[in-house]
Length: 401
Ligand SMILES: *Cc1c(COP(=O)(O)O)cnc(C)c1O
Image 1 (spheres, helix red, strand yellow):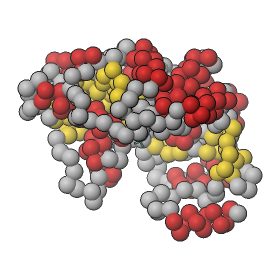
Image 2 (image 1 turned 135 degrees about the vertical axis):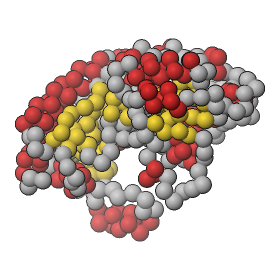
Image 3 (image 1 turned 90 degrees about the horizontal axis):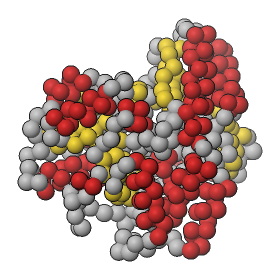
Image 4 (image 1 turned 60 degrees about the vertical axis):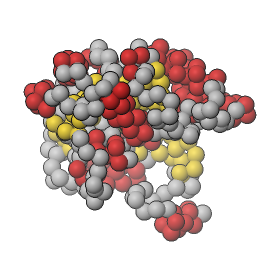
């Protein structure tokens, strides 16, 4: 059966990915199983998505029950779960308005359109430029690609959306120099995820807030990877106590069900009037029920506090490992359950991921040199111990670089 499925995949899936050579069929809690019955410890959570782990009973119940009641109605009509979700997200973030879409890239597209249209609506149509950051990642659509500060993702796709200036992350002097009367917004991740798990230096987000205010620009935060508890707080930006004008959420929000959201202040409610933006699937009852189940379970099981605590423990364990293998590891970094082990020198990270998989551990990479840990928020110390033990074994066994 496995060979048949792998054959079909090779023949018919569009080959824009390089998936591992096995086929997953089942998941429960912190583990997934392949067609051969092999079990893997899931420390990547589908790239920071399955916050409740796999097949969490409360999540399964909520989504299944919703499907028996109402699955899709379109935005011609309100639906009860979506309205409830909007209110719940606003209550948690202090923002006032929620727009729903289906992915992180779409949430960032909405931020981009919001920023330009906001100034346009105020009669300042020259304010179109966005100041964003080198090494950032905001998604794969043409707008999100333009915001992304990694030219490799844009190669061959030009001409792209213009009007984006990228400056070094963490460098307020460079941000100040990039500001001007044509800047519509500053856009930043509270921790750069795909770029290598780089947390904003202390005070950086507050500095962005001040610069945006000083120059009449909006502060937009891409919380697609950092949001919904991953950093040990509901939003990654809470460490600096910063309130953005608008944020993007996706990944962890639906616990594995596709959903994205843009949340804005009340002051931005007039920027995208009826007819200016939309999404057929956005805000549908099924996705909304999934996200509501995630939010409720985060509370019921105190999972955000758990993410902070397990994240601290993971950070300690990775720091010890870095001290033990200084010839292989540069450092440990991250926040909450968004962490990375930065490896020394140039190496084949794909081969390393494969060696880890062969020992039953699923991880991903971030940037060119980092092993990334983004486990479900239900992870405990025992999972951290098991994962770090496997990473230690594999790194010790490989020939020195
Ligand atoms: C993953 C990610 C995106 C893109 O999300 P998609 O759902 O893949 O479109 C955007 N921004 C950040 C910070 C991300 O980590």
